[in-house]
Image 1 (cartoon, one colour):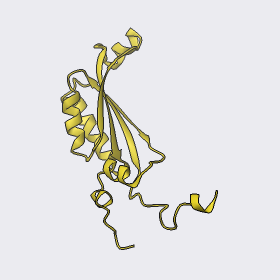
Image 2 (cartoon, one colour; image 1 turned 45 degrees about the horizontal axis):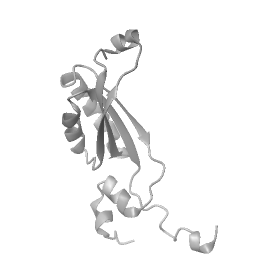
Image 3 (cartoon, helix red, strand yellow; image 1 turned 135 degrees about the vertical axis):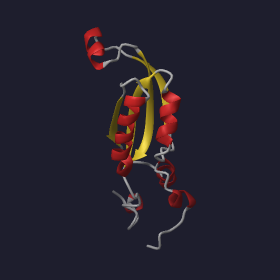
Amino acid sequence: MSDNMRVPSGAENIAPGRLMMLVTVVQKGKGTFFADFLQTFDANLQVCVVGRGTARPDAAEFLGLNEKNRTIIFSIVREEKLDAIMDALESRFYTVNGKTGISFAIPLSSMIGKLSYGFLSNERSIVRGESDGK
């Protein structure tokens, strides 16, 4: 790697925490409720799409997924909030979503741009360009 391509000293670990992509599958019509609920955990970016299940009828029946139309929510959340989010979702799946719902997280391995990271992590000091004194 040439000298002009090297990461500046001290810039290697500017991220205060790891980001995760949270995928949440809920009944069609419940997407807005769950997206609003996830936003309370500082999820600044969420995308809702309509999905249609393709599981075998016996597997869908076993999982309680008889209705094939679903809303899939893709959210970016901080890793340190993931346990609290998953616990809260489990409770909401039981009370709001007819005892059904699926949620899982995928770690994001890299991010291009300090401002993009700041926005997605809801880290206002990064977005504003504030220094922590280091």
